[in-house]
Length: 185
Image 1 (cartoon, rainbow, N blue to C red):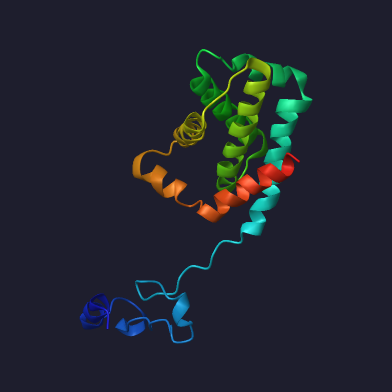
Image 2 (image 1 turned 60 degrees about the vertical axis):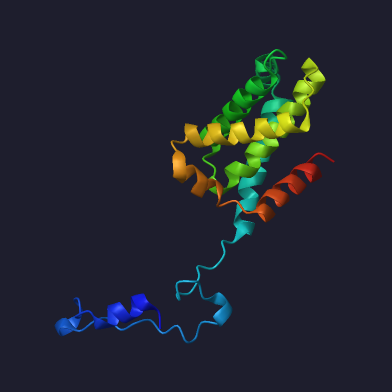
């Protein structure tokens, strides 16, 4: 038996009717592979299919801002600076995502894939319109700095940022890249 459980069983009852302890939940019905390290049932995985409409709405807004609304698109192009390619791409990516989120009130889980998509779109626009060509390491810097900037813009800092970023699994990141590539075809 778990040492914590042993200590809890030795403690006097707390509350309940007539001083009786509340009955412990019956975990016997939970399959062993659904039990966490703490001996409690694991939280079921989030239904990621619910995030797809959110990401699609965000993708539509990115497309509208960068390709269909000339005034907005020109403002973003003008913000890209060949003399500061990484910094200007980060700034415009953060601005794009935060403005879209302000308009659409997107879920937290949709922000990460949309940030990656926004970075990719702006890097392509920067290359086509301003001749900004980034090496792979610089592209990664743009994405990571954008993500850090978005977290900062939403008031997430320090260990909370690591926990927040950790909510996006490698599979979700891969799915976001695949969705981006599919949308570009």
